Image (tube, rainbow, N blue to C red):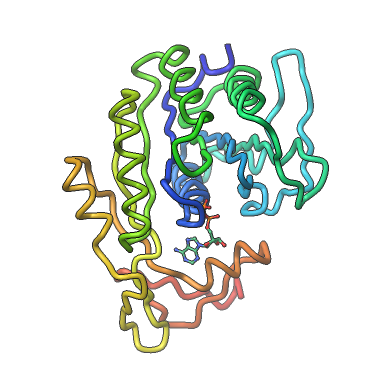
Length: 265
Ligand code: ADP
């Protein structure tokens, strides 16, 4: 079974589309791999698989091997520099064209979710992050059932829930948290994305979408609040163009100097 060699499986969930679920999955994967862990991303966001775009590997093709579909390698492990491997399997790789939509009925979607969980050959992984469609649809129920049946309890770590701060988003995420408690999925915590905009010129933070909604919700549900991610226009540039963003000298966010070194610009 393809999940056997995976140490920790983490779902990334959100109540709404566009709140940054795939962006958080991407950043989590990069952080874990830069910390030396081997990481896989399984992108089953049937509403719009955007992980291949975020890694600029939209043209990658998956190959079929005796052990299952082989995921695409973003980079191999580099133990000398303390970097772990990063591999991706996305529904997007199976669609004929970039802009193609998945127009499937429920049973076909749930069958695809099951197949993705059982037929991808992951080899050894420290973390498998699963980027899910927004909401609490048939695919989620199928995903929860399959994971709770097939993964060992010590393997299925739980879910990271992503929201934006405003009430219209947190209202939907509350449904997501209720879904987790009904299906028995442990919530690892809530991330509040697009939480304020830090002006690169004056370093002042403007709470465009209000602030704190994610933390209030986490407290209400007695789950951990994992933190806030500000709106970062450079992040958007990176995603849209697939190029490394350039930060002017002296750019400091959350107390950290993130300016681009002269040799890398
Ligand atoms: P979802 O997976 O929830 O549909 P995405 O991760 O695809 O959302 O994000 C939607 C859009 O918002 C993308 O264009 C992404 O680059 C952008 N985005 C997400 N988070 C941020 C952020 N913190 N700062 C700037 N842009 C962001």
